[in-house]
Image 1 (tube, helix red, strand yellow):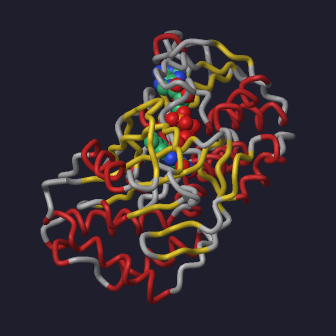
Image 2: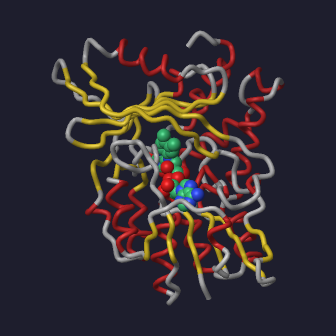
Image 3: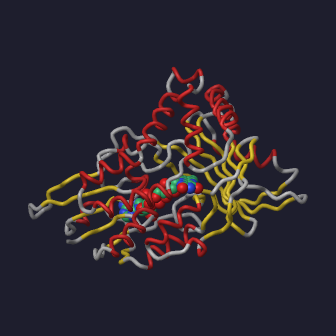
Length: 352
Ligand SMILES: Cc1cc2nc3c(=O)[nH]c(=O)nc-3n(C[C@H](O)[C@H](O)[C@H](O)COP(=O)(O)OP(=O)(O)OC[C@H]3O[C@@H](n4cnc5c(N)ncnc54)[C@H](O)[C@@H]3O)c2cc1C
């Protein structure tokens, strides 16, 4: 059976390793056409320490990629313990790719006629599958910044929802050698550039910032439920059937509230390898495993609607709290509920 994976990002690279362990050696295509200095897709490098379980499956060790634990971490005015850390994602992708049969080009369906199964692991591009039934993208802007402290206080890891007039947040993730990813993800009438500039201005008494790299991208926050179909059967030029099947962000395995997609895309790849090659069973398993993402998406849809301008409902606050708990972030319940309240201000302030 000939297998191709389009996309050697987190999901595609990991899937290649899992399939190889099952005796299937796919061809992996990725042109890596990225203008970022790290030569991978614009992205944050924040993950839970629990990523180790996935790495173990392909013989890798978190310690080889760990940059810094992010505990404690700031959540607006709160400080909480977290199991989060930053990892050197480009190095991890490189190690996934080392083990794969790599072809350094981007592909479309025309180049893939020879394969019996083609995996769409192209992330936000979803280059091979038909469009999602109800897509939703979170626009982002991220800088890689060198930071010098004016005093003795170091810039600490954090996420700040109250700096955004719409749905989203500003994040500060340390990436080593006094450098940070400082980014904004937000839906609605938000001028991402202005918010980052304001953050630098307001912090300038304590820190000086030098921007090293800047990139814009979008994250699919549609949820898997709204990103169906996950697969399609197509007739090849010789009349035989070919299966195209999506994995990772191409089928929406990203938390709609937080935009975290790394660990969820690894989990999705694992489900695909475990159900290989049964697309019906895979679809059922992914929808069941990530059912909570459908509920988070429902909250986003509500807050983006006219009705939602009054602010989050009790169920939205509960989902926010559950989201923090799922990530093992130790936010006290009452405070977490209050934080969610800041979203109610969202469309009002359009001058940011
Ligand atoms: C600014 C930003 C910050 C983020 N921060 C975090 C974070 O801190 N933590 C977290 O968990 N998630 C974060 N995410 C989300 C996370 O990066 C993604 O959800 C995750 O990388 C998805 O993995 P993937 O393999 O599905 O897709 P990707 O990692 O996007 O990989 C897709 C691959 O497909 C390749 N490709 C595209 N088109 C083609 C084609 N036609 N042929 C062949 N190859 C192709 C691309 O080059 C790429 O390598 C962030 C995203 C952004 C944009």
